[in-house]
Image 1 (spheres, rainbow, N blue to C red):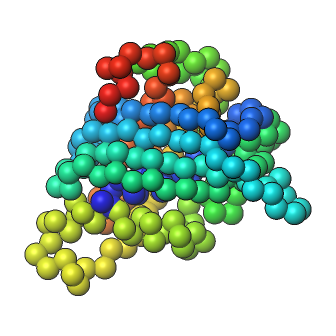
Image 2: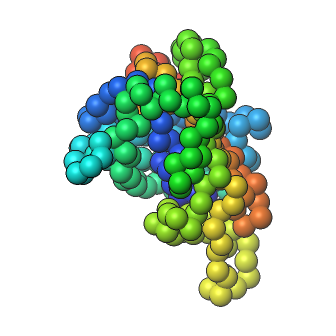
Length: 227
């Protein structure tokens, strides 16, 4: 269980950058796990995630925030099929064109909880479509102590797979993930957060784990959208 929630939490925390102004409320973006050694660890065998844009929440003195929910359905080694759904508040500023323009210009932005670095503008190809001029963004240096909810969520995850190999798991205390990073390719053609590709990695209980997901365009065939 800890593995799938690790990536659910990591993606939700780090996927906080949008290339163009949008109101994500009511939008849905589906992603399929890319099962290659370059992008995904063997422990994650199969799966998909789905992002849904929720309601706007105003806050005085800020641009408010939007609720974004993330549903996940993964098959994890030693743990079997694991499903769930988590919701997070994403600052409204991330949905404005000014934010990406600033990131492109400055190169790096320190959000306090994590840092964002603009790496390049590249064309990106998935199994179903090619997306031109995507912003390649790295999210890194995540300060877990500043996000206790996210930290506790991560502590609930990899356990199903990890603890299944422990003789007496009751007394085992799972630590936080380390070096959590994400690389995202952002395009105006993709709903909710605009991510064409999502690649998240981190060290959990001393084990390096990574997972890559590609956006599934609604026009894709049924086979492409299957988990």
